[in-house]
Length: 322
View 1 (cartoon, helix red, strand yellow):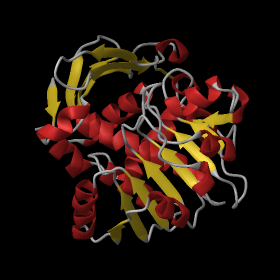
View 2: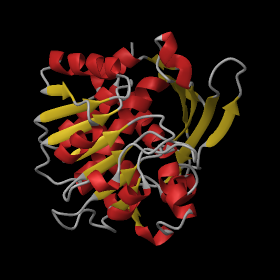
View 3: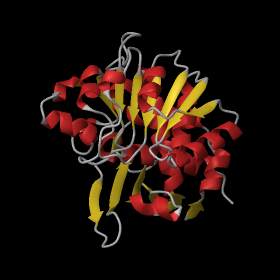
């Protein structure tokens, strides 16, 4: 069994490859159950969440078990890690052969999560944001933020990146990193002004209160919601969801996990029919995505185990041995 590190992945992969692998993955046949959630209760810090995310090639559909894979990601989300100077998300991925179940590779799960989550948002943006989108607002400055920014820059001609974070010190660190990479970036202290100024608004936070208000969204905006992965968490208010054409990564995940979808469903602000399509529909041309320039689109990402398996396969095939 191989051990594949984040550095090895970074040297062998790029976003165009990863985005296209996900596009093909959503067009293909995989079995990807909704992830298992387990709360870990702590006495002296915020509770953690353990996520178990299995997926495997749909062997029944292909008629045999060869040339396929199975895999599982184990994720621990610990909000208080910020105080320790560590990423909130810690993970590992085990990729196995489809026919024998023999372990093939143990992959840095944090790196895999960053790659596949940001690539999924970019894939959705390819269908949902305006092709001439030039200004991006990043809401949140955690470890995932620079990945999302660079993924969006892969599919759209982003010329300016604005960063808002509840703690401005985090925004300062992210902007300094982006400037060092040659990206035109600056802090925006007023979230409303940032939302109103940008073509794409991407959010990756653990907020339990809505941050992005529908009243701030101008026509043409694409909203990319990546954080807030439990029913109690939320990054957008009811008006934002009502005003937008809603898309998700998977219908199953969207209807079981995120507060951005579940809360407006429960209070009657939207109904299930208002969720127009998921990435399966978009990649298979069952829905065209954005239908007009003035449309407000909203993509809610919950994270799908299919994305992890597709990414793990790509990594195992791209990263050289030794």
